[in-house]
Length: 288
Image 1 (cartoon, one colour):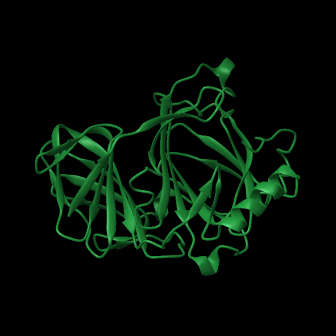
Image 2: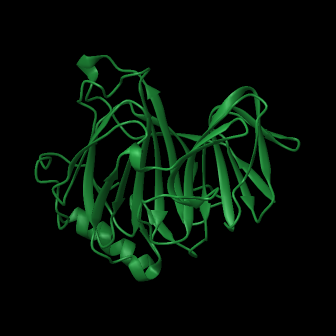
Image 3: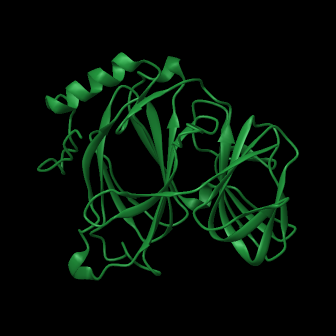
């Protein structure tokens, strides 16, 4: 059942990196376990300004961050010592657990290739029992992600299970995340088996009944049996959802089922008790 359309809000991550933010929303704090969703770009910058959009080291607790590129390239570093390039179609899945810090740099020659940097970033809340797990990072090349073409649509499953596909990406709760393109007029039924689902329009437009969603808008659904149809120019979409985990407290980059845990994380970052990436520790983002 269709529930609502969420319009994006502009957010500035600093140094010129502007994003469309659709989650969290005042009337919809999450979709399944997904508590945050940003769409950055496309951001075209000339080489002499390649660090203008850098995201300096910053902390997380109680969640997994999921980075997925449509174009460009990112250099990821974290406090575990990870150094990883992420390219279009690949998945960076970082589980913060009890605490991690990381940076996202754009100094690689391909950072703004193919029309500019374009990034989708999700935050997935962890079940209460896993919120204090050991931090971890895993990178998945696109060759490991299952794909399917059917009835005018192309699907790549980023995580979870949907449309008879299962991703190798390790998750902590039932969910799915999917990159899809629809040809003009193609109809796609939403995957079954998920209590809450959302469709984000990156390009083109889709309709559901009398509702049309254009770039930057998010359609939210509950239950089963819904479908979307692409407009005259087709559509590029991100679909995601799953089982909700209950109320989560959020401040800045911290997510927890316990408000006092968020307060502790704030104090820890302010006091310098989070480790920084070993090869990117000379600057960081201060607590807001």
